[in-house]
Image (cartoon, rainbow, N blue to C red; front, top):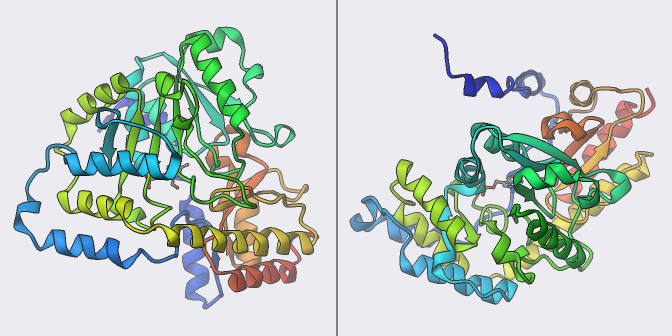
Length: 388
Ligand SMILES: Cc1ncc(COP(=O)(O)O)c(C=O)c1O
């Protein structure tokens, strides 16, 4: 069978070997510290779970929803005002089944075959997949240590900027843990206006940000809603990754086009999930803030712990990840991950899976409590992998 050429744009699953090794070691009874997954281990608030139970009990909620309920759109607008101080209207909001799915389809909304798009490297992999599905050609702008893992707009060649259709920005960053400054967002908006480039801001980690920094919305900056949209996911803030609830928010004509594409393939978000979103957005959020403090304790345990055993790891400033350079004698992040799991029982994600500039690093997720992270650090120390 000759499958589509589109599928050939994607490489083979690189995690298979890592997974196989993990299963083998687990079978042998070895203690495994799995820091590769990006799904929170914290619990979902009871009022959010109850909303699903109540909604599922009502037969009316089992039919096609066909659209976002007005109460849902109002809840998103009210949340943006309350949480981010941003005024938006219902025509600026469209739900999607997670930012993953939304970003995966956005390329097809904005691009034709052969169009140029600007993507960060390293980046969350669906940024690349979404552009490839659309047949677009990614130009990777580097997020490197020398620049604090932030975009350097001046380094993007003028001819590339002129032909680019959209640019994805995502801060706090998965995988680097870097965070934005107001000045950077203002520069991005000016860049978008100068070159007529749409900005897609992926805001998955606005609620996981450390050391007193403020996690906000891109749309809070003057002119942002004229140049782009923001993906606002409930997954990480409210610990409901499996429920697949996110929103694309911003410039109304882009939202209308996004709805048009989705209308061809989707009959609307399951009504009980719309109720879940309303419960999360209109309910108490003190647990979201508390949780941020817990992520920071984990960041301190892992980054501080790794430094204490001689690993030169910088503190992450936000997101649920830390970005760790591999020891100098390794040239492949995948090889290092395989050795790390074998020798220390610690699983992390090879940097190469985040695009061209990811090689030379691994990503570790803050998905275990501090005491287990300290135990993982101790397992790494005992393995001697940092020495040779
Ligand atoms: C930067 C980034 N964007 C989007 C997502 C996916 O979010 P969702 O669960 O809304 O699809 C993730 C998940 O890890 C992420 O790290």
